Amino acid sequence: MGLHRLLGFTAAVPAPSALTAFYGELGLGGSPTTGFTGSDGGASVLVDEGDFRRLIRVEFGCQGPEDIDAAAARLTDGGAAPVVGDGELRVVDPASRVELVVRVADVAPTPAPASLVVPNAPGATVRADERAPAVFAGPRPPRRLGHLVIGTPALTETRDLLVQGLGLKLSDEIDGVIAFLRCSPDHHNVALVESPVPLLQHYSWECDDVDHVGHSASALLRPDPSRHTWGLGRHFAGSNFYWYLRDPAGSYLELYSDLDQILDDEAWELRGRTPFDFEHVANSWGPDLPLEFIVPPDLDQLQAAWAER
Image (cartoon, rainbow, N blue to C red; front, side, top):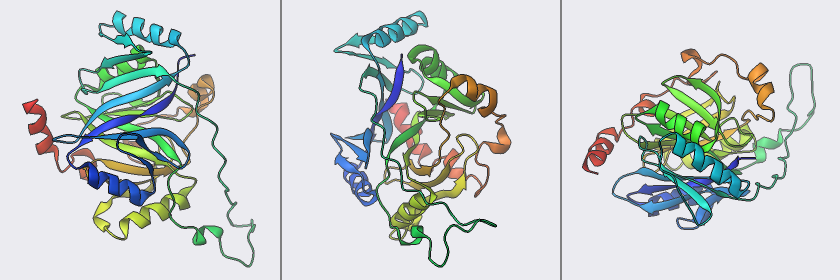
């Protein structure tokens, strides 16, 4: 029982039309008001207009009304002030300023498996006298929204609200730096990073494999190379391949594949959750973490905008 999936998030940006056009290039379906989704549907990104970019709301699905009642009790015991009504729970995190919503939702349908091809390798030729199928593939929409990363000025407090209050689980963490939380088998559906101001640091769309990541990222970069931010590489936490691009609003969009899946909490704690430290906070291999990923170029504007609110 409890939370079982990410339903999506809502962001405010100064120019929704530019972000909508960018999502069209990526191949997402939907609209700002109905939500943008990948080819499998599922979790969605809704877009509002605002005077500066910010994350407004994150929504989670639970199995039944009893899960809402249990979360409300935990939050109240922890000193929060949840609002329950119309079949959902709402609570605002004081640190990140994000409204967190829990409502009853169907379990996400099992997606059709990708048509993966075993590659040639030393001593194991499985494809003879022909080119790899991946070289003929082209860019295509990502499968689904997988996770988002929230910048918060009080990481521990935000983490405790999500874990102890709402019921997300902790997958990996460097205390005071980054925390990876899950509400599904995915290694993380929400991650938290320390930030001077609240922000949507990045959000991530799942692809079939690393070639899908490469084809789709390349298609976005060819008309505008300045969109490139970080990649290609493989993360340590979560183990996934990644490639990050800058969206028109200033947040980072990640295309990823091969994320760790946690089906048995005890098994993960015994053999999956390996030591995670500063040496691996960025990746296992790939380019160095760019400074703008830690200090966004629009930080001064965001600080001024939050100061006025």
